[in-house]
Structures are given as structure tokens and as C-alpha cells.
Length: 320
Image 1 (cartoon, rainbow, N blue to C red):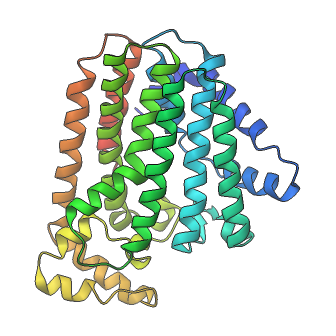
Image 2 (image 1 turned 180 degrees about the vertical axis):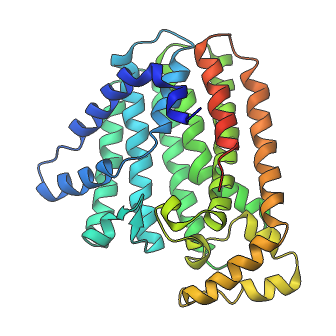
């Protein structure tokens, strides 16, 4: 079953969120409006809003309230993508020109900042101080993750622990908070919303590791950007760290830099794919996934719990 079919019962509410996102893109500056809308229209899985809605199903579900959390977190995700593309000098995102490519770095940075600001404005409708504290902490962690990614570009001596800490800040925390804040907005008890945070964290870690594997195994058409782009941009991911445990492989990998040709990069990608790095990375991803599935079974029985379980399993089985 395709991912979207699993949460098709949420479609009407997701449409409400999509419309709210479009309304949020309105800006006095036509340029900010067009740049923001360009990113929105490029599409996306809207996974974070889905997690928000599913978490809300464990409490007093009111789409008119919970939509503010979903919109806010999707805006933060979009803003982080805009900033990522500037840092990585990326030309394509989801098969479309990035904002920095279509306009320039300055427009991209201001667009990202605008989306962050709008996210905070939207969430102000939630009258729960803990929600704002959680979001503030999340933004701090995201910023630290961005700085760490810049600092560790082409740092081939970084540890696996550094990688895990970075993907927590870059990806997992936002999925975790989507689950937690969705539950908080629906007045779910503390024990459940804390459990949902952990579930989102484990799913997010698994999701990002598989994303990093797909960067080596999927095609440019499937990725919507060039394969091996992470490595060429200096982002050292788990498959690379595992592959470099072999000295001969490491000697080839550390030659990669921003000036490496497509042919040279292709040879390095082939070496990594021939090693056991991909399989080992998938094992780690599955370990995180199993932790999420164990906690999901501890949640109250309802349709949202079953859907969370199905989504987690599907994320873990994405193919290349």
C-alpha cells in the first residue's frame, strides 16, 4: 500500500492545512510571496502535518486548532530546506530549481527567515506555554544542526556519534516535535505526548539514515537531485563513515571535494555500494524503527495508532 493511502482518512484535514499554508505565503513583498509559493508548489510529502494530525487523534481532536501546529511545523521544515540549499549550493529540490538557484542566496535566506517568522506567528494561536517552549528549543537545535553541518563539511575524521547527533538536530527532532505538539494541542496527557515524542524521534532517525542510503542507491530521477550529492557537498553520512573503516576505500573517498567530476564521483559511489556500508546502515535504521514500533504498541488502541505503525513500517521499507 502506498504511503498516502495509509492516511487517506486525513485527506480533508490535510486539504485544510494545504489551504492554510497557501494563505500563510501571502506577503506584502511580491518577491517573498513568489519565492515562498515556489517552494510550496514544488510539493512534498507533508509528513510532519500527518504526524501532527495522527498524534492529535489520541486526544480532543479539533482541526481548527491542530491545523496551527501542522502549518507551523511544515513552515519550519520548509524554511530549513531553503537554508540547506544555500549551505549546500544546491540547484535542484524535488526536481525543481531551488529558491537560491531561481533567485539568489540573499533572497533564499530572507525567504527562509520569513517562513520561520510566519511559523512562530501561526503557533501563537496555541495557548499553551509548553508548546512555545518546545518549539523554541526545537529552533535552537535546528540552528545548531545547521552550524554543525557547515563545520563538518568534508571532515572525514568525524565520528558516527557526531553523525547521529547531527541528524537528530537536522531531521529527527522536527518529526518528534510534530508528534508531541500535535498531542499537546489535543490536550493529551503527558505520558502519551512524551511517548509520541520518542516515537517520532526513532522514526525520524530511521527515515534520515535511509535517505542517506538512497543518496547512493537511487537514481537522479527518483531523488529529484543528483545521486551522490551529499558526498560531493561534503556531507559525510553513515554509509560513508562505515565504508571508510576500510583503509583502501577511505583513501579513495577522502579525495572527493567540491571540484570532483561526475566521473570521479561515480567511481567512489561504486566503491561504497560494493562495500558492506549500505547493509550496515540499513541495519542501524531498522534498529531505530523497531524501537518506534515497540512504543507504538504501547499507545491506546485506535486508527491513528495503526496508521502510525503502518507509516513507520513503510518508511523502513523504502526501496532504491
